[in-house]
Image (cartoon, rainbow, N blue to C red; front, side, top):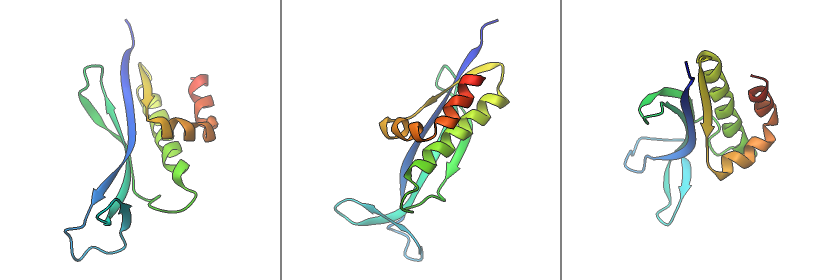
Length: 117
């Protein structure tokens, strides 16, 4: 029996809260309009057909803290590693963009754990 593939896709998105007057402690989202909201990093697991299986990471704690940009990507890789342990009969592949890959170099400990599996 062949192993099935699960794709652990992660990326950061912006949640624009400009229309909420009572919202406080928001991040500046940049852009021409000076929007404010929350930066959030999500990890979603999908099967080979692209059907969502669930989220393995949801993190807004890093916010705009200086020096923590890589922390969200490493946390996402840690989440994908946990997913691979929970789904040991499947092959879990993490998918991220160029920023995620460059920050993954910082988190080589995670990649080393993947190789040991």
